[in-house]
Image (tube, rainbow over all chains, first blue to last red; front, side, top):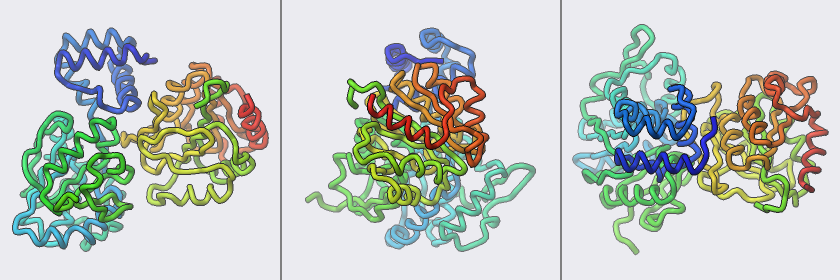
Length: 274
Length: 192
């Protein structure tokens, strides 16, 4: 199936006009691939036809949005990132009586539970609140349940060990049939909620914001907008953790952050702007 | 990208047995080789830049890991980062994706080839080398459909024949070459 450029742009405009969802600031190559995938799955072989069907079928559009915004993740993805959080960030978080953390674009929640485990081991979980948000309601529902396929458990365990975990990983979940369920105590201080980074505003002030492998899906303009949002949502000396191929390098906000760990993409908001 | 040249970019997909095959091809390309070369080598996720360091030692052209939103420059060899899909945008920049593995692979050869053929059309050369799975075969079909050139390493010579064989079985591979011939071929198209 081929998606031609003109029709592609027209489709995005139609969607924006009718439903208010703006995908025009998303990286096109990924989006095009997801649309192709959706069309193959739905056996629709013409882009104009897809546009017409989406315009009059809200249910189909709901499915379309889910397919466009689904992301995959893993427990302790990039273990060295979590190790660096333990080494460079935790002792500074510990100085706050009450710790607020935002995981933006939490997908199916594996990284949320990873951070909860880390905070638990560092003795900080009981005075932390983690706000975990995503645009995709399906992903968010999976995140809330905290039940994952047992197939990935080996990878998760290995990642946990590499990340500097201090216990046995099996203490945190119960395995049943083909699934593992993470311990309820981890969830106590997690708030799951929908949030669309491209349109929604800041909703609190945080000491740590983690947003990994979300910005790669955005064009530069939207990336900058999101960096502004994060900047406004961090307290002075608050931390920002990005995915390992993401960077503040091209952002206007670059000079307002100090690099804490260059390799792991961990930054700290400066108190004063010089 | 120079619009006067016949080709705009070379994309290479390689898996098991790749290090030897890739370094064999790259080591004899001159420092002033014109076309950008973009390589997907299936690799271990936690060795972030090791492959780039090893390969740069062996070749004269500039070689680096592809960065998100980086502009593709002539005469540079780009390697896909571990654990991300590498895609090409309409404005000849790279984008990365963290989408699910395709054919158990991330980076996926198919995804690079498909996005590259969309952008470069008939000005793309796609090459499949040694490997033990069938990643890249759908990408080869797409390149061929857009009128680009398609090449597979001769499976008899490949350390792992399955991947070039799978590409050839699509019926969309134009040239089946030994590594030595692939190298000559690259030098030839660089002059076109």
